[in-house]
Image (tube, rainbow over all chains, first blue to last red; front, side, top):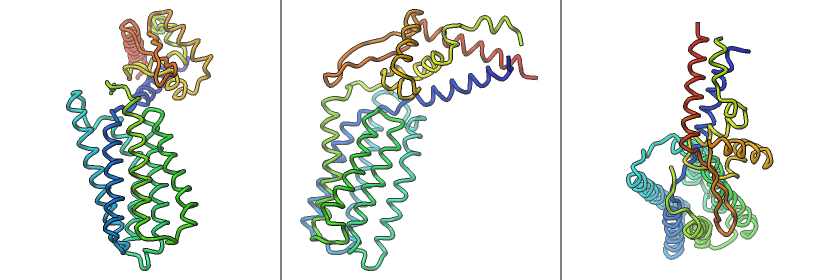
Length: 207
Length: 101
């Protein structure tokens, strides 16, 4: 018998053990928080009716930062409550999966922020954000319970639906509708998923 | 290689599919049947057979419940399974050490 088989077996066991540690947190409060924040962002944007591409990007940048900080604090609280490390291997893998699509979304937002006549292309930005966010969620779903990948697909499909309803984009409708769409897609989907998880998620998650 | 060590390896765990199931359950308090099936790319029948073999040895416990009105089967390692798995790993490590020049 090959003397290396034992070493290879140990390596396989290690890989399988790492793969099986799913990132399991009570996602319902996080999703509900992000959902409410998104809807509030949509309402604020619509009410204030900013007429510049920079204001649009800044508003949603602030919403994204608040969502990230709030989610971080909620996860941290769960970790402290369960006496678990925050920066665990599954957390690291989820973060690694999220970073590339988030970077693409942020880069496109920067282009949009500094671009000339950027307001005309705002629908394209919403589409790119839907797709990159959907891809990020889908990638993270490989290290999370099953439904999360489907949630990623919801954003990708919402991007297609948005593109279809907005008539192929390029600013074919009123300015405030962009924020309304952002609130409906990002806020609405998170809130709906959060409510679904609230009623279906196991109350005592296992790490 | 010392054949005695090899002979001490638990035959039930040593099978490729069952070893994969044990490895995954060793790192997680419990996994559902679908999670195991998807992660290991096994067929329902194949996974059921392996789970049954491990259950008969007392290495894993299977719990059936309902989630969202759908049946949910979850598997977890028993204390005996955890012990047997730890011993299996210890033996493998011993074999690796023995083979090192």
